[in-house]
Amino acid sequence: MILSNVAIQAAIDDGDLVIDPEPLPRRPSAFVPSCPYDTCSVNLRLDPQLSIPQPGKPITFDLRHGGVSRFLSEIYKPLLMDRDGGYTLQPRKFILGQTLERVALPIRTGRPSFAGRIEGRSSFARIGLLVHFTAPTIHAGFSGNIALEMINLADYPITLYPGVEVCQLIIEQLISTPFQNPSEFQNQATPTGPR
Image (cartoon, rainbow, N blue to C red; front, side):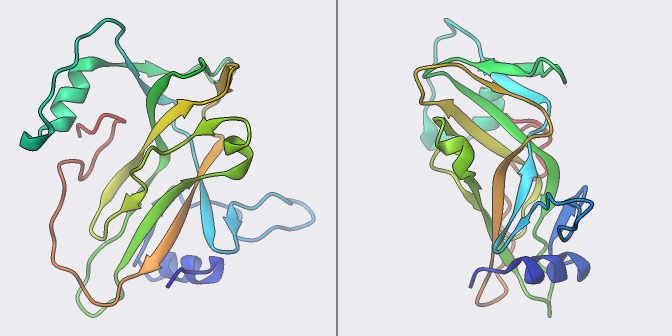
């Protein structure tokens, strides 16, 4: 069951979903017509912190053994986007970003449990920006900034700016309360995953 914007806000009020800072305003008005809550999702913003692959760095990694976040921090270099100039993503180039907002989907006995999906926004997809790359699920129990695997599929450069509503979070209610099984990316604070 996918939550409506009203149900997303109720889950935030009840502490069953945490988005920090909370997206505002909660409803559009004549004074503030832009609202981050669509009918069944909430838009999240791009953090200024990016991780850029280091050119020429050889990549040999056996995914069967885990430890991806440590490996990624070795092959990517951090970059802080300029507020006004942004970052220009060249055609067919891949980078890691993250949401400005920290998201938590707590598992609490006697309370509903939720999972989320992060999806791109159609306005960005239509110009060729893929915001997540096969990894949209945000598991119940997760807490942290959400990593964004971004690639420019267009034939022209796309400039990204910090604070832009680049993706949408869709929330779904679980049928029962799951047991905890945190990933290596739990409490991540950088696009590559280290805390």
